[in-house]
Image 1 (cartoon, one colour):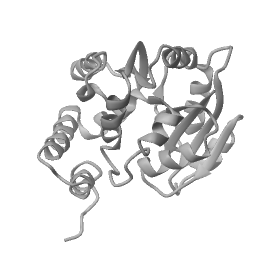
Image 2 (tube, helix red, strand yellow; image 1 turned 60 degrees about the vertical axis):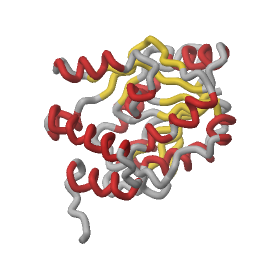
Image 3 (cartoon, one colour; image 1 turned 90 degrees about the vertical axis):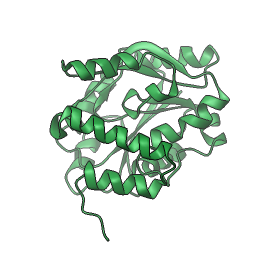
Image 4 (cartoon, one colour; image 1 turned 45 degrees about the vertical axis):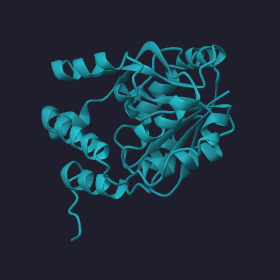
Length: 235
């Protein structure tokens, strides 16, 4: 069975409707055993809104997406872990597709991704996600992985409070043939729309370039907080 793990923080405005939308995408045969929402200490009504949705398990963990996802994996009872963002909607019958991929020998994979936007640049980014190259991956595409492989590689590296979705793919790609299922997961473009599409893309490239040059997880996080999250950094 599949355990869906959704890390959240201050998502009260969208969480109830989005969880219901995700539930509607599950096949009639339902390979999903549980949906776990892992809250990072929200100070709005995220937890209450999530608990209002039938069939949802809600937990609170230390803040930080890799910490929340590792925490969720420890609570999960399924043989397959499916890490999903709250603003990403997988294709209809996604659970059957994941199970079939596992049966075909892939211990991990994701879906092709489309932004819910008509902007040409975002369409181009979406087109790139059909390729298997690790550089074409991103957390918005979601990630399914067998629990045994996840535990074998040690889960997410909690030192990387950002870039964690790329870091975990290094050992995954070494251990299994990663599968990119040719069906679309639809994700929100809200971060791009709020920050400016080209500006945010350049900042993301800045993070990738700094990592390529050997920047530490702390340096990447400080860059993210200053330039993307707009949080002043201490001297």
